[in-house]
Image 1 (cartoon, helix red, strand yellow):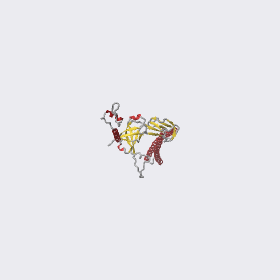
Image 2 (image 1 turned 90 degrees about the horizontal axis):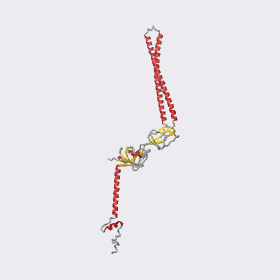
Image 3 (image 1 turned 180 degrees about the horizontal axis):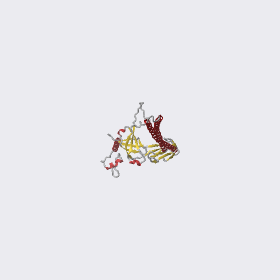
Image 4 (image 1 turned 90 degrees about the vertical axis):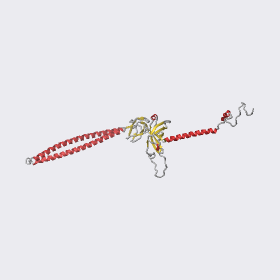
Length: 359
């Protein structure tokens, strides 16, 4: 027996064979093991192909969609403030409470407005009485004109009759009296007509005063209605900063009502706007609702960049100009009934994807 043989009769292992090549060497002398470097090369090629495919897919997706991370949920927020100054009598709502349109939020003390309304109604009643009085005066003036015209008619006939009588049959005194009576009747008729004109003017003035008094009543009623501050729309109460007993002035912020309608305001780079059109479909991903893509569409594009409408617009007249990519606000509205199933409020961060329409 040779010294290189194993006790079991098998041939000895080659000293350069590892564990991975033991089985291949045991099969037979004609089997050659695969080199480890070739396997790593195949894996590297597969990884590179995978990355290249992923990059192609991402590039294709980027060509079809316009997205931005500068976007948030928007919604109507109504600032509630009193139109008149007064003392807060009662606060009818709590913070975060849902209210309906027209529901009373705050009541102010109406004592002063009640007095003003009563005074305005009294003035209106007095003005109406003056209208009635002036109307009666006008009717009396017209009746007086009728009487004066009748007297004038009689004086005219008497004077004409005396003119036809033989002058020797009547005295000159009688003829002069008839002529004087005619002149007096004519003057009194003219005065009565002028009294009618004056009575009409007085009635017009009284009616104007009555209209002014009625306007004062409506204004007093309006001021009284301001003592009840009502919700301008349905929504939720936020930022409540008023309590019963507070003295508030006109325009003092009391609370806010957040409406139920929401939308998305997305600030896109000016280089992306060329492919965005009103009506295009979009997908909205909301950070507060991970994994859900909400359907939406483009509703409007602001005709101006955000910097144009800023409080202090950029002034480049000095010549020190640095070009900065501007942002254009785009409004998207939801076209998805599922939005009602989640708590989505203004200010939440979103990521919109607008499907572009390339020419």
